[in-house]
Length: 198
Ligand code: BEZ
View (tube, rainbow, N blue to C red):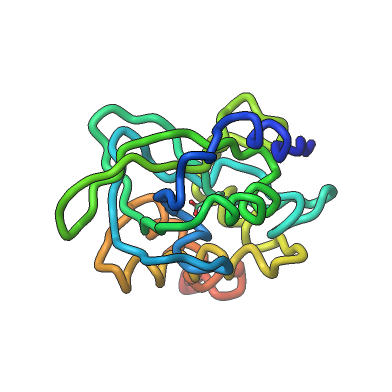
């Protein structure tokens, strides 16, 4: 159910000739930057969409009751908004550990909202990783998120914090905002449903 990707990530890239690198954040890295960075700039990457399709057994859930967190899935023509961080290579030790439940680093081109572009890295959990959950109805995703909690806090706060962070950046993500709306909608109970006059 979980698979530690720390060692695999260490083999993926050599940072010897870099003083700093760009990292693209599209999920918790937007609202929880618990690492030192040199600068950050709103940015996008092309060809990927956010989805709550990755299981979280270590942060927003447990092995018995996993939560759902974000990954990216390929989608031709899509543009994913996020935050770019310029960091030193040493920061990857922390990030590889934090994102060890199935995420691998990939190289990509970042386009900065204020102009220009740069090569950078992004963590993505692919559909062959052991913690992959995959697609489900919005209702079932929200029910799982609402119920789950782990060492990093409630899964629902991950969704709400992400939606708030995207809104603060002036970004719209239909998948995230639809789940947020469903999560915050008052629950329908049989007793609150309209009844036919007798
Ligand atoms: C991100 O915010 O970029 C991110 C989300 C999940 C795992 C790793 C990174």
